[in-house]
Length: 132
Image (spheres, helix red, strand yellow):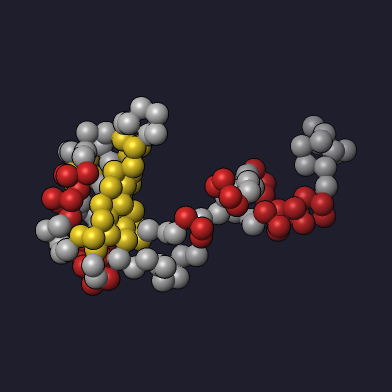
């Protein structure tokens, strides 16, 4: 959750990338902070176009911390880039492997907690008595 140390303290998520920003541009920009071990702009599998986000990974957590300290200043392709510590795929809620993330009145609950709440209160979305 929030405040927990990132599992990959050297890897940073880059959000809000302009469609024109390339792997080379993020590599060139972020290498000014220190040694990059990896960098990528995520692309649509079918079209090859940017999906608007990417990742950079540094050889040291200290370099990643410096990038995060400047998080309000990163601009690529004329657009501010959101930088956040990367979250490992298996730690993300939902997704293809993890099942559906509850929405509506159950938003924010784990799937198990949502199921328990739904059975305890029953009838959501079923035209319960007293509704309407």
